[in-house]
Image 1 (cartoon, rainbow, N blue to C red):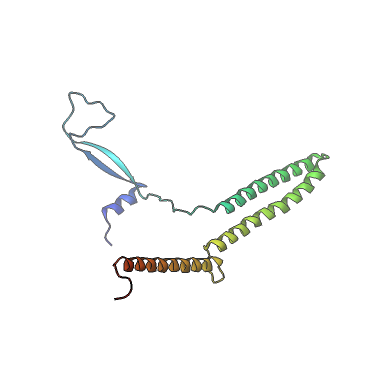
Image 2 (image 1 turned 135 degrees about the vertical axis):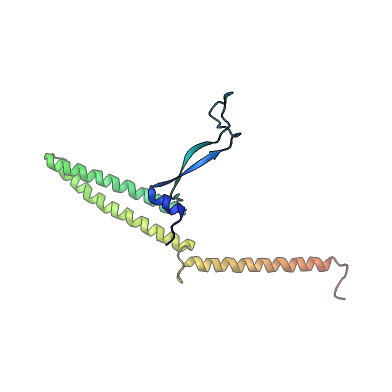
Length: 175
C-alpha cells in the first residue's frame, strides 16, 4: 500500500504543519519595516486543520410551528419549576405542598397538551403546504389547480396575441 505525504503528516499529529515561504518584497502589515530588512526568505509555520466543518443548511421552522414550540418550552419549564417547588414544600412540611402538587398535576396535563399542539401544528403545516408527498396531500391538488389555472391564462394570452397580430396586418377578414 502506498502512503502519501499527506497521510504521513496526518498520522503524526492532529494538524498538518506546512512551511509558508514569504517573498522578499512582501511585507507583513502589522510589522514596521526598518532600514536593515533582510532579503532572505522568511519561513513561518501554518497549521492546516484536518477537516473544516460546514454546517448543514437547515430549513427554517414555519412560524406557527415555532410559536407552538416556544409556548410548549415555556409551559414545560414552568411545570418543572412547579414540580420542584412542590417537592421542596413537601420535604419542608409546608401548607403550600398540597396546592403545589395539585397545580403540578394540572401543569403536567397542560404541558402534554402543548407538546401535542406542536406535533399537530407541524403535521397540519406539512399537509397544507405540501412538504409531505402522500396521495392524500391537499397541497398536491392545490398545486394541480394552480398549474391548470396558469396553463389557461397562458393559452388565453397567446390567443389574444394572435388576434392582435392578425388584426394589425390590415386585412378585414380572411384572404
